Image (cartoon, helix red, strand yellow):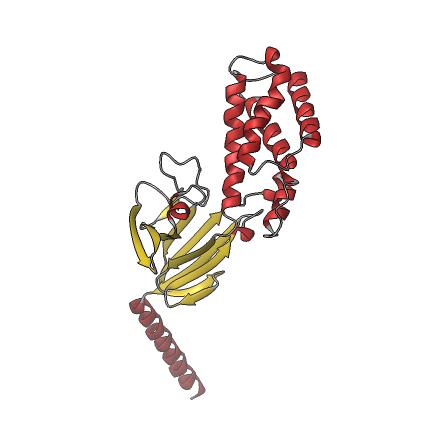
Length: 287
């Protein structure tokens, strides 16, 4: 399998769609110059067999979420190959529907979605910290902070904020300030980390808005089933964008078979002989 990313250096080296890293992957980077414009090209390829969970580079904040499973099954008349790959849905309309609506309208520069997004990020971060004994709060205090967040995002004017990152840094200081004397010493830093993580997730979703993905998978033999957009010989092509996995998983599937010529010839000969034997028996029976 091969991943190819083309664009300017920002598109290629940002974290919105990092390439897999480590065994069995090999990465090459090159540039093309045309009309005084430089296009960066990153290619990552690997030979896959069985289930593969992709991992990003050590410096990447993104946990890759597009596992692939490649299977080879030997049968009597041939060998079957199957591949299935999941692009995990971003669940945008479950987490922050207004942000999803804004992504669907390229001309919409409204910041109405910021409050809704911060409420999701802030309350989800609290729920995460409630799972850790070192940052767990009494339920009544956790509920008070969540209620405060609701009031905060309802009354806050976000029209001058240009990104979710800007809002998140102000947000943590504002919502924890009334409760600092009641919080564990490590809570503000842990909460900031959790909020940053979910803010980064949302920021990456936004960066994917104008990206287009073309996936080519090579399967030997005859393709017997697939949801690919097109097929050329043994190459299957899928073309999709963020809208295809904005909420739900986007799944690539394909199956092929390589027939064993010797075994097929054996079957043909065996069937032919059987037909001849039956014909001879019927002729003798009629006599």
